[in-house]
Image (cartoon, rainbow, N blue to C red; front, side, top):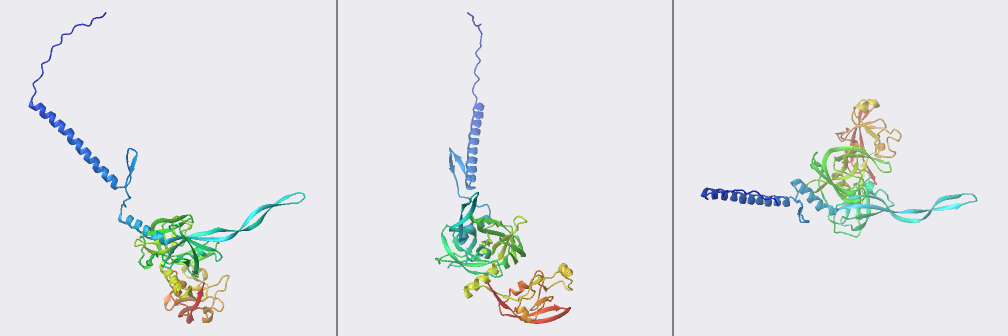
Length: 409
C-alpha cells in the first residue's frame, strides 16, 4: 500500500476586518442592484413602445396584438376615406341566357362524326365592372362599356354582398358614362362630388373597384399624373372611342375597375376610372366628374342624356398635319371625311353651308386648337343653341351662323 507523504501546512493568520473593505463590498452590491433596476425599467419602456407600435409580443406562446396605429396623418386619412366610402362602391355584374351545347355523335356506315347540339340555355355571367352610388334613391354612375350589352340583365353587389337588380337608365352618347338605378331600395349612401378645377398634378388619388371582376372593393393609391389628356380607348370588341380632358393617375387600375371612383383626400369623387395603358405601367385614366355631373343632371330632369352636335368629320390642325395636308394655317378643324362623308347629310352643318375642305377657326370667338378642340367647345353649349363660326375657305375668311342639333343615345 502506498502512503501519502506528510505535508507541514502552516495556518495563515486571518487579516483583521476593516471598515474600508465593508464599504467596497457595499458599493459593489449597490452597483449590481442599480444596474438591474435600470435594465428592468428600460425593458418595460421598450416593451410599451413595441406594444404601441402594434407589434405582436410573444409570451409563452401567447400573442398580444394591438390595433394598427397609422404612422402618418395622410395614412390615417386614406384609411378613414376607404372605411367611409367603400359601402357606396358596388360591383356591376352582367348576366345573359347563353346557349348550352352538348357533344353528340352521328354514325354512318363507316364513320362516327362528332357534333355539338344545343340543349337549352343557361343564365351565365358575361361581364363585370364597378359603379358607385350617387343618390339616396339608388342612382349609380358607371362606364358605358360596363353596361354596353342591351340584352343583358344587370345585378349590383354591395360591399356586404347584398345583391340588387339594376336597370340602365341612360348611356352617354359622347362620354364613356352610363347611369343605372337600383330596383327595390331607396336608402343608400351617395358619394360626395369634388371638381377637376381643384385637382393638381401630384396630389394623392385613391381608386376603389372590382379588380379583375373577382376582387371586390380593391383599393389602390397613387397620385394624379396628368390632366387634360386626350386618348383613344379600344374596347374588348375592338371598337374605339376618343376621350378628351381625361385625368391620368398612377393608382393601379385593372380590368374590372372600370366605372369605379377616383377619390381625393377630402373623400370627394374627382373622376370615374375608365381605361388603362397596355404599353406602360401604372398609367390609368379617369373621366372628370365634372363631365359626369352634366349627364347625371340630365337624367334626373329629362330622363335622357343629349348633346349638341354639328354633323361634321374633322381633324385638328397643327404644324405637322397642316404641312402634310398642304393647308396654309396650322390651327383649326379641317373638315375632311377620308372614307366617309365629311359633312353629314341633313345635319346642322350642311344646313349652315359648311363644305369639305373648310377649316373652322373659331366658334363664337373661341379659337380651335389641339388643346381646345371643336368637340370640347361644342360641349359647352346646349342643343338648339345658335353659334357663329369663323371659317377659312379657299384662302378667304368667312362667317356662318349655325343652330346646333341634338344628339341622343
